[in-house]
Image (cartoon, rainbow, N blue to C red):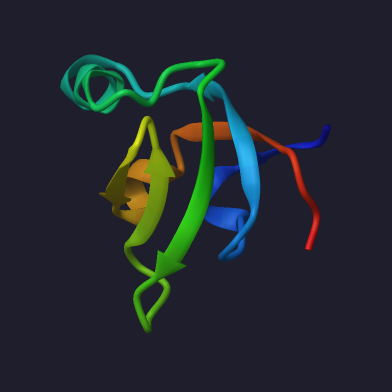
Length: 80
């Protein structure tokens, strides 16, 4: 499975969190929201200007800014 930044994924794609490279307060906050390596998710949608991105993870929908999603590397499960 190819590894790409979360920002590059399209609506409907599925993947698995590979790595969260953010450190400090931002890294802790991202991990506290359940975005940890090994967790499956699906991209649910994007705002009209492509920021933010909504993902379905751990039975809830989480919205992340592109500046936050740049720190999240994912294994793409499904190519559209």
